[in-house]
Image (cartoon, rainbow, N blue to C red; front, side, top):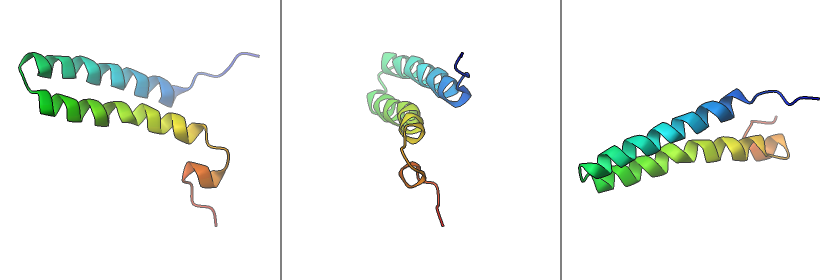
Length: 66
């Protein structure tokens, strides 16, 4: 059985690649602090998505369970 494509994972990966490219442009014009902050926040999105999708329970994923 073929696995379904994971749209959110694909989009966040592409977004991270774009962020990395833009940070390299910022560094080329010596905007190091801005590049570092943007890199950290922009690439953490994919890590957060991956962590949420790997959650073992609804409580782990941050979904309100009542």
